[in-house]
Length: 89
Image (cartoon, rainbow, N blue to C red; front, side, top):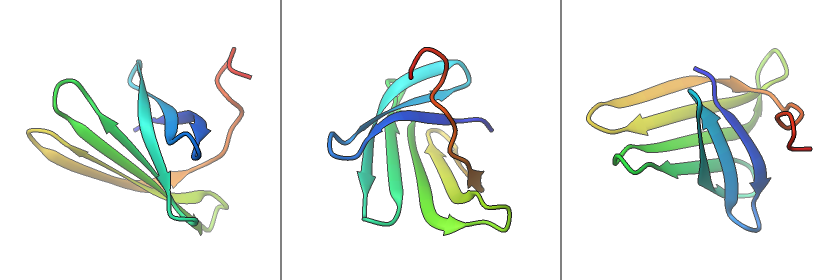
């Protein structure tokens, strides 16, 4: 699963998400350690991505992505920090 989160602004509670060719505005929250990205889509699907302040053995951040619709799905993995997508610097 590929998901990019960028234009992250915790003070403004906003970010942009890109996945499977779809780009959308999402809400972002922080508890001073972890980041939470909430995406409510027009088809009723709700996605929550949590990026934890814990490193993996490979130096990336632990993450979990949960998506609920007609079926609930949960993905565990990690994420890295990268440059913004082309044209967004």
